[in-house]
Length: 152
Ligand SMILES: [Zn+2]
Image (cartoon, rainbow, N blue to C red; front, side, top):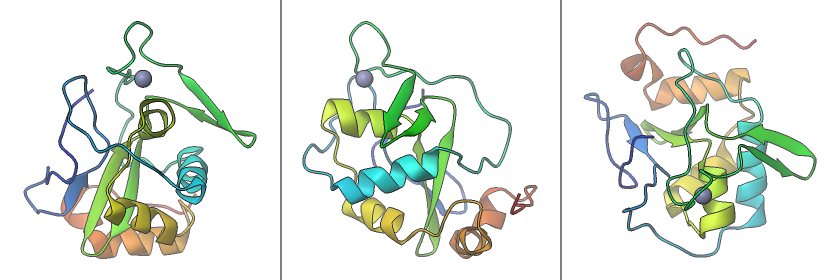
């Protein structure tokens, strides 16, 4: 999996920003994450909208031997780890996190930036028309000019 410091701009438009791309050598923030933020992330990642073909599996580089459990279940919601990214609209930009962000929070004490947690809590249901409107305001067409989101 690609590794970035939190809040790294990774698109020339300046509108796609990383959160949660941790590797073994990352110096990441640790601390409390509210249940509300975690539960919302689980909900969003159960069936996240993807702009393109899925990339290969991501494995956790922080787990010493196993690469992390490929399945995460919380409050009866099942999330497959490592094959999807999550796009969270924020003011004038889009925050992109790997699905492994759930595992990093749950197993490795990771605390995402406050701006990300706030954007997650404010995010409309994924795949809803409101979600795509928010992504477009965040720069969706700059970041993925060939992608036409559908509310399907
Ligand atoms: Zn791990």
